[in-house]
Image 1 (cartoon, helix red, strand yellow):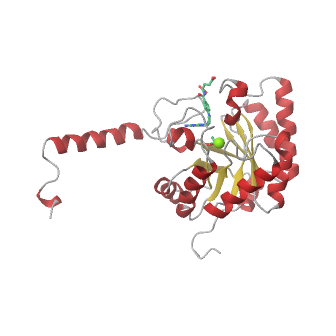
Image 2 (image 1 turned 180 degrees about the vertical axis):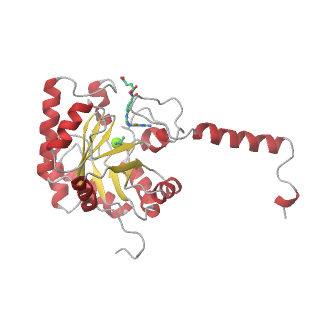
Length: 271
Ligand SMILES: Nc1nc(=O)c2c([nH]1)NC[C@@H]1CN(c3ccc(C(=O)N[C@@H](CCC(=O)O)C(=O)O)cc3)CN21
Ligand SMILES: CC(C)C(=O)C(=O)O
Ligand SMILES: [Mg+2]
């Protein structure tokens, strides 16, 4: 159990209390120990070990290639860093779509081998049986609706979702279903702000938006995007809080220059 008396861990109950009080939830991705330490120490509520690690960490075009073993490796590193934040891990593509037993086994592996506090998976009614089974095992589940990147080849683009009424109605139904099953929250990705407001107001559990406007219970971004490390990714929903690509690049340029010019190491930097 928790031995740290000074820092109170965020739990799924904390997130529900925040929604009840109208206090916004701040969530960011993290994939490694060093970055997670900085983000946790800076006061984030939820750390998401996203399958966006496939893009950001491994350089793949999509989230599809990342494996369950790789997600567990990233998650265990983040868990070791997180003193306060709730740590949630994406079930990667291919680790849950087969059947609900597979979904449960994958979730159990994540909880057992990484020490994370809950899982997230993409989809609505199609994955209801899996969500129930994972929840029945006592594992907190977060839903993810709207732009679901694991289905990119079904949709063909990363454009805004649920602009048409039929898709908007399915999203409303899916969100209610996920709440009814017992999910502690739902990510809403790249949908119209008014639809996100409607869904957020109709649910008692918190919604966490990314490109879903200001009315969600909280917000999530990929940390490399908001720190400006991921050069060239500038969707409208992104606010860049730093330009670390430039800052880190300049530091490396300085080092290269100092080595080439014989400036580094100097007499104090040797034995
Ligand atoms: N670095 C990174 N950041 C993310 O937010 C992210 C990932 N990776 N990987 C998984 C998913 C994929 N997501 C994405 C991917 C692409 C766009 C995007 O390019 N949007 C463009 C144009 C898309 C279009 O209309 O076709 C935009 O301008 O919004 C948005 C979200 C969000 N997730
Ligand atoms: C963008 C967030 C919601 C995500 O699922 C990820 O980073 O993988
Ligand atoms: Mg994801």
